[in-house]
Each structure stands twice: as structure tokens, then as C-alpha cells.
Image (cartoon, rainbow, N blue to C red):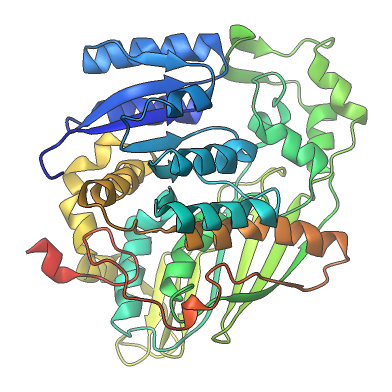
Length: 434
């Protein structure tokens, strides 16, 4: 398949799906076989994007099951709402396609098992498009961990912490599915951005695994305060299928203000602690409905050193010149940059989030083209997504510990070697960049 153009299908054409469609259309070795969304407005917009960027017509569908009947696609990208990811992914694997699905937490453990069992039965990989694994810092720390510069890892932390009150609070106004989760659920709703890189540093599902989890949620008052007190002008929001756009100050009679008395289930700050089979701990933070600047809380700590992303600082025992004194991390990234990041520096403008959208998609397409397992496999996807369902259980039981399923069914103890390649996340294969 080395010289063949890959034929892909796109399911979900909301804000995220539209942006990813534009990026994929810019790849000369990829053809868009079909696009799909429930909204006529979004479908027509997608048709226009493909015609403009690819110079051709594309077949459009309103039902993903009809798209999957084509039988001529190598892969399917899933950019739907969180609760539809697994349904579409399972159906696509059964249709004989590689699957790449956007990130999001699972609604149930059964969803995770469905993904795993379907991938095992069909032999088709399912990759979670966790772009944070391909940030420069994530890749550099991965390389340094594998070189042993941090010694034996002991603790890591990460967080999804920034003010999303406009996006979440206007969920009905802008037709955003995230809103319903905050109204009806109380959980670590979005764990994979922080957890993905950490899991790879800790060899999860390859010699190590998540054992137990506890989650604690604060009270929910951030959104209520937002509804009662916010009267500022908002950015332009596309309202697909409802109104082309919304701009300006919300009028007093706007339906959003009916939310003042609405119960919000999601705690403003959720703290989750995971214990691993190797004895390591991981702390995750979810904090999106309070006034605050963005912060990641990314940390990697071992017997020989520690890195803290927010402070842009590092300390390595025996390497840092002054004992007990932090150093700037940037010079270490210059010294230990992952070869994949160096290779893709010229491509960073091609994708969102600083170029990592482009890199994670190219990693998926590389596996499709080679006919091998993806760098983030279905066991990774299941374990990372399961945090949401498990944290929901733990919070509901007063922060009681809950056990993690072993989605590998024991294979984590001694799995076959991962596929070597430029985009691999279990090790750094320098020889692939020669």
C-alpha cells in the first residue's frame, strides 16, 4: 500500500470535525471517500470544504451506517459527540476499516469492552487521537524517561484546567454536546489529554497497568454563578442547524437564563488518584467551570529527578549543577528533543493545537498504510476512556476506591513487542529516522 492514496471516511462535522476535515483535505496522499453528519447545514459545509480543498465532489451521508456500506474505505475518522464515539467506532471496525476516534470519556465500562472485543474479533485497530502524546514536551519527557534520566518513576500528575464557562454555559445556544454531560454527570469528564502521555511514560498495558481509582468532586457552583452574573458580550458562535451565527449580548429573555435554577451535577473541581500495578500514582485534575487561567499541572517524578510543566522547570540528580535548585526545562528539550518532533517542525502550521493534530493523524495514517497496529491501540483507548465511568462511580460512592478492569485480559504482563516506527510511543526508535 506504499504508493496508494488512502481512502477515508469522516463521521461528525461539528466544530472539531470541520477543522480536522480541512487539515486532512490538505494531505496529498489521502482521498475523502465520504462524509457524514446528522445536520444538513454541516453536511453542505463539508461538501464545500472538500470541493474547495480537494477540487472534487464528495458523497455525503446523514447516517454513518450508510457510509460504512461503501466497502471501499481504508479508514474512518470519528469526530462525533462523546457518547457516539464507541458506536461508530465499533460499526466501522466491523465494516473492515481502521478507526481513529476523537478523545472523550466513556459513558460506561461496557463501551470500553465493546471496543476491545470488536478490535480483537475483527483484527482492525482502533486508535484514540490523543494529540497531547505528541506535544514537544510529552515526546521529550518520553525520551528522557526511556533513557533513565528520571530514574524509576514514582508519581505523575496532569490536568485539564481552564475556563470553559462560555463554551459549556452556552451549550444549548451553540448546540454543543458537552453541556449535557455537565448537567447530568459528576465525573472526571475529560481525562485523556493528561493521562495519555503519562500512561506511555509508565508503560501502561505493557508491563504495568492501572489498578484502582478514587475521585473526589467539589460542589457545583461555577456555572450557576456564571448564569446569574454574566452579561458580557460573547464571541461569534456558529449555531449549526439552528442559526448561522450568534453575536452580541445575551438578552434578558434568552433561554440560557432559564438555566439559573437548573441543577448542575458536575463538580467544579474533580481530583482523581490512580494507583498502578508498579506502585506508581497518578493525579488528574478537571477544572473547567471557574474563573481561572489555563494550567496543566503536568509533572513527572522519579528517583533521580522531576519535571514540572507549569513552572517550566526541571531538576535531575547528578546532572543539574546546583543541588536543590530548579533549572529551566527548555535547554533540556533542546538537548533531548524527540526525532519525530524535529522531523515534523516544518509541518506544525498544518494542524491545530501547535501542530500536534497533524502529527497524531499522520501517526494513524502511517499505521494504516503499513497495515500494522496503531501507536495508541484499543487497550490504551479503553483504559484511558474508562477513567470517566470509574470516577463517576467513585464520586457517587463518597470517593470510594474502584477497581480498574484489565482490558488486556492479562496480556499486559508480557505482551508481544509494540510495532517499531517513527510515531511509536512505547520507545524511541532512532533507527527509523536515519
